[in-house]
Image (cartoon, rainbow, N blue to C red; front, side):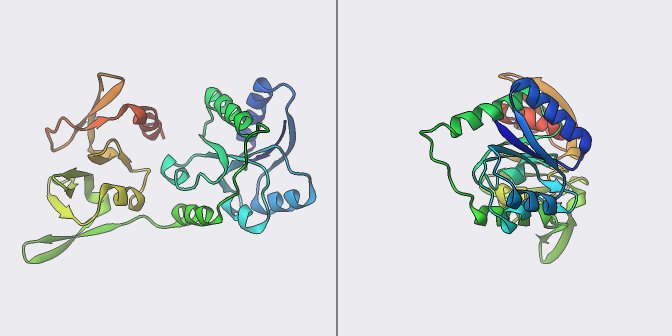
Length: 254
């Protein structure tokens, strides 16, 4: 297996190389590159690798720019320190995505997916440039700084920084402030997930999108879930769903 590693942190590149060589003793690391410019040049001058490990944010920009500048024939495993929300927007024909620091078991899983996808009977999908463009927009855009709310006959703005959490109830979406005020807003939680800073807000379940500042306590709960004790509410539905527990822990540990 011939692999290209694209990573602008030398230590991370060395660590990835070490783990790959443990998992695949016969692996060939064709090159380690650290910028969009160098990757484009290398791909145009060399044979395609079997697999590319591609960091999203490089020294000279987002790695998505590579797909706009040259043809990428190999499947890709994206590596990133960013929250999953951005990665979910563009599966393209990537084999997988890995959050840094990369877990050896998750890396092994990505290699297994690569082997399954590259079996002779499997047809390889083409890269979707529309998805790449949307991913770039998500990664570079500014997050929403305020929300407009109506209070009686008056219109006010609430800073996102003053928001404790958003929640849905009886087909309406509410914004709860740190100061215990509550307002109806004209957004769904799905829309809000794309608008607010994912470093500060996390969608724990279908009902709640919470800020770190709103979490008063975290308690282990049945069926491998977590229950959050949120400030300014006695609601017992602030439970991190089982499929989001590991992602939530990574979010806490930044």
